[in-house]
Image (cartoon, rainbow, N blue to C red; front, side):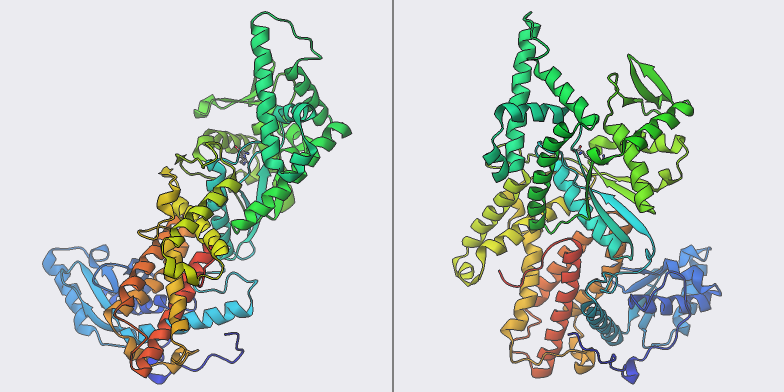
Length: 623
Ligand code: ARG
């Protein structure tokens, strides 16, 4: 693949004439744009309009045609008048290396058909060339087919996953992890520099409580074996003990300040906020051990972070500065000793920024944190991927920064998502990421075992089921628009039947197996080695057309922070490949035809693998 030879020259019959440069068209990256410009040119000439005006109206993906342009967008009049314009285009039309046919069945739209062979040739050529460039420079994510470099020079910070130490990793964290990773990938694929930041919930009174709990119930051994599980267990226990004390107090008993768990926890947290070394040391250990464990788990999901930050890391100066500016600008009010920003005018309620005992709170830390991050990263954009339940919090955060007059307030964005219903594992309703991955893996393993013959051929059933299992969980999460709620159903999403994760992996496996199963068919490395004429059949043309739509799917996913756009594209491609499979065979076909088809399947696999990687999936070769 990684040959350094210059791209082979284009045969004369497929040589494309130079086209005008049109804003929005990027044929060097998206060859379909060249064909769109050609159609726009024809209409622009006939309509006596500027091509820049026509081009944005050229549409791909309309049923029954390759390209369409709405006449009514440019010409008004009675149907008979429109017919005159349609006729003018059609009468002047000459088949070219771009387009073979123009028609207007209803005089509302102009339809153009590609010169199919030329289109096939150029699309396949572009895929091989970009694949080669990407293979030669694997660290550059803007070389693969479907990517752009338009974010070059810009820096994005993405805050995602962001679980709380000593608490379960809930469905909201899972979704944030999955969606945040894909958003990061999409921005990188469009030239942005991306900092992936995990903003741990690692500060607050509850960590004082945890510390008290650990002194009472902690086990050094269990802590080292599984810090996340153990700290959670300790946390639950101390919380129960505190609740029991409270009941006793409510029943009239007096409990000394020394004995009171609540008071102890407050004292420890106070000491932590004051930076007392002993209080900090224990907490820091809990934090470090939890991060180590988290990293191992994230790895299983192809998720990584550039920075493990957290509420504890926000500088006190920034928080104080935020409070001071809010007060100076008259944004605050007081209530029972607490300080609040008053956003009632904006229908955003009032929000505490300093508690009555002088300690900080979630919002204070996000305010100060925004200062810290802007100072450090000078980001052009900062996305917080957090569940919809926190919408008010982020609206308050952004509004407060705006009222404070911070220039970066407009660069902050909350990417939100809906609920997951019914998420629980065999171990119970409290979900740890680790258990969830394990369960997905096991369920997948069971599914695979149900086909004994196939199962026997899989080299590494454990590893394979882990990859397909996590694929299943991720695809279930990203299949619908992110704002929608969904029901977590491990049995269903690991099914090989229907539009679930395993189906996408299965399509990739099939596209790999066609090469393995046909070792005698010549492996072309350039489209010049095949006869594209032999590929001209409806089922293949549909695959190619869909591959030409891939850059649009990537673009929509990127612009809308909406992974589902890409998932939908993958499902459609998988269906098209499935439909071609039985009839457009490589095995048994005449030599040249077999060669051309194999080449097509390999390029299809290349693009599917690109899409899967953007979705943070590991494309597998056998299952
Ligand atoms: N730790 C928080 C939670 O579990 C999420 C943090 C999201 N990020 C932020 N900057 N507030 O609810």
